[in-house]
Length: 317
Image 1 (spheres, rainbow, N blue to C red):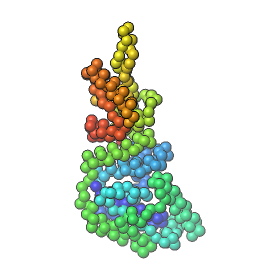
Image 2: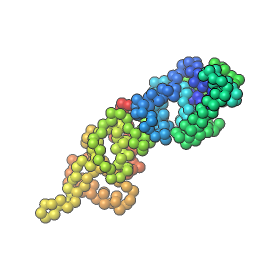
Image 3: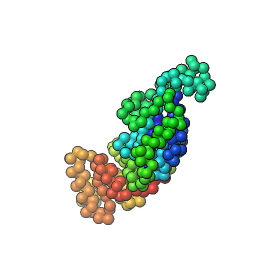
Image 4: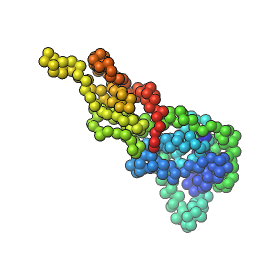
């Protein structure tokens, strides 16, 4: 996949330039309005989503779109993503205040004092939006590969420069994002989103019970992302009985995944608890040899997903 991010200061005709660059390159234009629509369709109303989840939401949408298109993304903050990915060209467009005020005067048919006030508001809003979503209000220059001055270069010429830089980098010759790569990216993103309790609409979920440990809730949210049906503590297995036949010890696994006929037990790193739990698991396997059960530490959630191929299951979002 190839991605060109185009961002900068208000009043620099950024989206217009991005649209012209996308046309020259034959890439798909991806705007902030389109992003908001897709996020709402896939994850619910944006106003209900935490700001700090935004980078992960953007990454998820970008990964899905990159399966079908190379992209020119005119979205503030997109330059923070895919920092280590080679097939990305990050473009910054700026200009002196006088030029940007003049642009706003023409675009919005404003007098100069009104345009100055609007520019100040747009700048404040942009900085605050970056701070809330990405944890920083300013963008360091080293994040960008190409900086353009809108005061001296028209949008058509800026688009040509962007296109030339992208062609020099060979972006158009890059293949689209492969399905296994997207699956891996989506897993990483959804693992982060699960921490915010964000799940897609229509997920498969049984009536919720209170979780004993936060890790269980994170794991349940992760299963919801992959639309894997689960039951929480659905069954207790007797392990020991007294002389009168009364159960004196039992074991209740944390989760049951009916599609895989698999019980899952999450454990902590505290050795005393691990030793006791392992003893119960051995006893359960002796008494119930037909039961399929796995024990996982919190750090092994990802291993569980890949071992059973859940990350490769289609996700309808």
